[in-house]
Image (cartoon, rainbow, N blue to C red; front, side, top):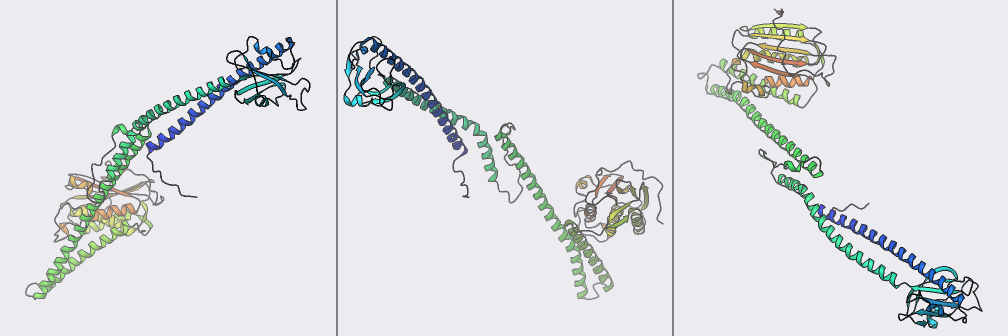
Length: 517
């Protein structure tokens, strides 16, 4: 199959050509139908007149007593100009095929006299049946005639009338229809061109908008304020309006996608800058202590130097391990899966937090309507709870009460960590689970109390998502609560049940607690 060639004409031109061809075909069909109908009517009328003339000629011939060549009946009243009459040979009669030989023929002239036909003209009338059928014959010098021959009770006689009037009328009709059709087609073409241009004008404006948008460089920088199709060109009741509305939706999607890409690039640049600074700080410390040791022990005590180098190395190792964990979770690598008892896991985490932060008041609340069992990676889930408790310990003052609770139903398992500390700054809440989000902007950390790298809550959110759950935070001065929702063990991780993203403010954390000590 040959490949289809692309359209080289505009839609306006193709529509105009198509409509023009349709109009020409329709006009031609109507004109042809009119001509054929008019011709049939005129020919029927002429045939009737020829038949009537033949019957009158037969009657006039019977009343006359002339010889076989007598055509005096042509002088009778009622004979039109151009009427032709002929007689057959009475002795020979009809031939074997029902035809006779013309022996006399005359025609009525314009002045009312009779003109005898020549032999050549009579020859054009030979071979006509005398059964009353109608024939069309072209007689030299006289033109085209409609003739018939009837026998009747007497001698066969042939009568004919000229077809000039019919042909002239048909020719005039064709000329009138051609002129009228041409003028009508020209007028229709102009009207169609104007209408098509007006109707396609919205589509042209939509195309112009698309061209303008296509010229905007979208590969770099922030892309905002792209041109939209005007509202009047987005009416859904028309095809052009549907295209305009679809183009506006596409431009909205493009803008939102580009804005998201811009935000992603900014987050990536910020992530790389933060990661670089986080790694550069311990590296600078290690390099500094190594330089001091190279200058001699008088500058610094070796034991202290090695202790600081080990601490900074551990800090770098933890940061790199956190980054690798986030990378693995981003890639969707499968986690270990086993049945985990969240009640025991949270109790162990609270025990560890109590040992690390003795200045805080640690409490555990178990609100179990069903076993708190989930399918997942126990080590990673323990890391989630440990990070939440460490976050509460680091960012709240001594004496703060931290309550870790576990709620289990048939529909979901929920872990909540609540403290009565100063809360999270409102401007940080939207980005609290993003990477390298910290309450302080300083990157110099001298000890655990100075805060972490800003990856802890990002790891918590990533692990929760990997287990088919989600985590939300609700914070105000005097109350901060993290709520982690996970599907229970009888629900597959691929289809976690729907859970409300809003924290359950009415959870009775003041219920009797269990002290792991």
